[in-house]
Image (tube, rainbow over all chains, first blue to last red; front, side):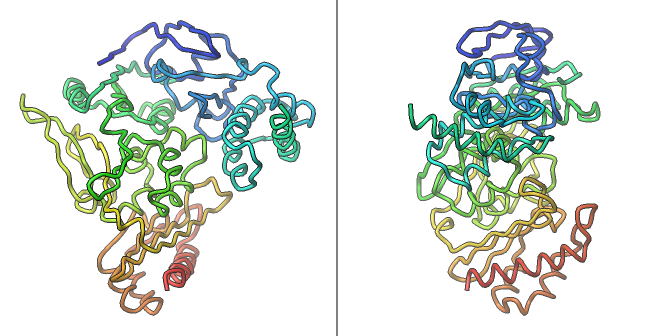
Amino acid sequence: MKELSGIAEIVLRVNGEERRAAVRPGDTLLRVLREKLGLTGAKCGCENGDCGACTVLLDGKPVKSCMVLAVECEDAAVTTIEGLRDHPVQQAFAEENGFQCGFCTPGMILNAAALVEAHPEPDDAVDREWMQSNLCRCTGYEGIRNALAAARRKTAAL
Amino acid sequence: MIAADVVYFRPDTAEEAVDAWRRHAGARYLAGGTEIATAARRTAAFDLRACIDVKHVPEANVHEICGGRLHLGAALTLSDVAEGDAFPLLNAVLRGIADRTVRNRLTLGGNLAGLLPYREAALPLLLADATVRTVAPGADDRPPVRQERPLRAIFDKRLVLAPGELVLSFAVPLEAPEWPWSHYRRTRTGEVDYPLATVAMVHDGAGIRFAVSGAHPYPFRSDAVDALLSKDGAAALPAVLEALGPLRADARASLEYRVALLKNMIRAGLEDLA
């Protein structure tokens, strides 16, 4: 049985690389990514699991990193927005103006990338169910919806 | 981040989990952690000194049909359960809880054992007469105690567990997911919100079974209400409301609104099952 207390060194697999960090067991994944690993793409929004600005992928599934302890993630593959390099969903968000202030954008893109991967064919009900997890305070939802559709077209064309 | 200094345990077996609890009385079991991580960060009033991560306990991850029953591990996420096709009513109820990315972490056991009063995942399990497998620390130096009990026997507003008792899994008889079912859920704002009322109903071949949360202060099912609805249908609504006892009234919705909502939902459910 693994036991951690005080300050412990953990190894996280982030964006395909092994990263070491000295953490307290009470540190959330969000804070460790931002403050220990310098990956500031995931944003601190509500830190209450409501807004989705901190969304990252854990083993390919979108989760809110403010609700996950970093010590829980040692066996998982973590993907942050920095791990997507010119991904079709990123291209689509840029081309379709799927953002305004941009604060929610990393979380939106990661959730959308996982959605397109899991459901390559468009389905309004599924899209709505998934994307409801992320809030855009600028209310730029039309651009985001257009970006999602464009991302699917790009992915299908690959 | 959580201000308190926390000790983190990651057991590989149920026995190790309860042993860790025995060594750190007051420790909390953590599976999805959605409630623990947020509550402990928000307020020092949420006492968190040690957490025991039970995600890797095999018995808490079962998802299988065995011995004429569907077994669902308490550490399965709501998304994992809802993606299966074995229990359609449960899937429908789970899809209403929180949002998709939270459901990717929030677990079945966590929803039933958490602090929020709605505990909607309990409704289909109460209707299906599910059983609960648990393990608890043995007294003194005795070995851990494993039990399987009817959920209804240990669900009184919430799961009533012994100190250190860990929920491992739920089991429902295979015929229950086949029963005709109905589910209605209403919120005040968007779909991602706490329920003003959630109603789940089934017809088990002999009669109606009814369970409610949101409008009621806690998940509720009673034989008396089942009998009223089975015997008199919608005509029993006044008696049903009386049998339910005081309903919830808060800033989200008045008592009168919730009563009206509940009546409409029950009527609609009865029509669905007719």
